[in-house]
Image 1: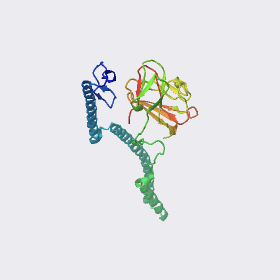
Image 2 (image 1 turned 60 degrees about the vertical axis):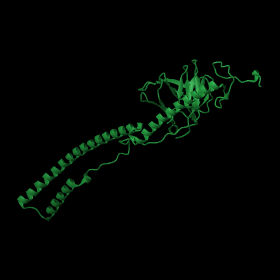
Image 3 (image 1 turned 45 degrees about the vertical axis):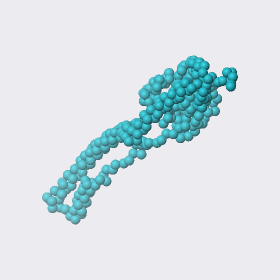
Image 4 (image 1 turned 30 degrees about the vertical axis):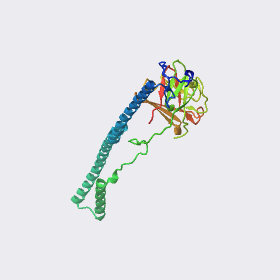
Length: 320
């Protein structure tokens, strides 16, 4: 018989003194029969929650696949269509008006020539003073008047190779494997497989870097992690106090929109490496900001660079 000192007791947090009867392979806890049953019941409840969330998502997925008109980008396409039609209709009306005005001028000129020919014909008939050359000249003048009246060659519609009347748009898929990968210190932790960065309970600046390197298609990768990373010359971006950062220097933004990032705001970041610029869009306010990046100060490859300051603040990378 095993001695009491060799027994393994139940690991329940409430201080159970019963002998352990089963080992959970998931959490490696040894539990007595009663608490093992309770443990399995809690796991079953968590499983029910996951299945419920799965069923809700399955219903949402089924609706998306059967009701294409509910896609969030359909409204954007419809708006583009309406705006384009209005622009085309306005331009067509302008062209009609231009054609009417120029045609009126042309008709007045033809009327004068027609009147002059009428006087010549009348005088020739009255005085019986015309010869073969007069008849040829009058016939040619009449043919020219007919041609100018009926021929569309008098006017042309030309294409403008400059700014297009309707902006060309296209649908493209955005793929990213971006996750948070590096932190400067222990004031922030990364969770959910790199999708969430969470500041601890103190107020202090701390830096988080993304994993992906951006070179074609923000802080430069060559810049080391540091406490006050916003002061690095390779830092370009925006702060929620209406400041933008260029070469690590703050500048008060004077654009139409106020730079702000509130709780639950969804922010879209676009790294346009081909044109050496970055863009930020706040989906709540529809405010759009753009910065030109000096490659001498912020060379490729670029990296996502986030600074958290407030206690318990957090940021999440959303899936596309």
